[in-house]
Amino acid sequence: MLEKIKKIYQGLVLALTCFLFIVTIYVLIAGTNAIKKGDMMSIFGYTYSVVPTNSMEPEINVGDSVIGHKVKYSSLEIGDDIIYHYVTDEYDIFVVHRIIRYDEGEGFKTQGINNQFEDEGYVTEDNFIARVVWHGNLANIGTIVLEHRGTLFLVLIGILLLISANGVFDIIKTLDEKKKLTLEEEKEKEKIDWENKLREEVLAELENEKNNQNE
Image (cartoon, rainbow, N blue to C red):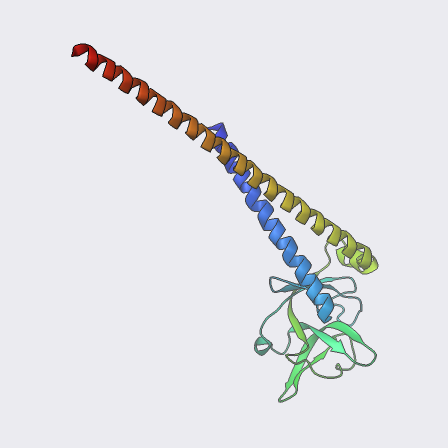
């Protein structure tokens, strides 16, 4: 019974390790691709950002964390808070503002609810990133991210690499243990087969001697 529970536990640990390894690789690839494209990293269709300005106060404050969902552009509506990529000769930033109207043939117009004027340009399918599905400030995490973004990114990458290395080690170790177990089982089977064969030969020889005596 204990051996069975141990095997189940090892199987669960292996499954969890494989899952974390896959997620880690996915995050690293997604992050690398996002950096190359100048885009926001997306994990399973969701993005994370921190608001650096007061343009959406009092609803979304400086340092608030924002989670966006990559939805279809056609599903956007007036009143939605969205994340979009704002690029000009002076700026190359991601903006969290509210949709105020739609101009046919142009796109959505946005504005920060704390701003006097609407944003320049339009939000189109090309620069739309995600619809805001949650915002808030948990344990001041957003402010910490804003102040130590570079350090936190390096720490995160280090942790992910550590998880990946540990995951690979665990997988290799488990496969090696299974290989050894298989070899031991094969040796045990060969031993049993040899003993059975020897037993059969001895019994056959005894039977022949008995028949010879009877004759």
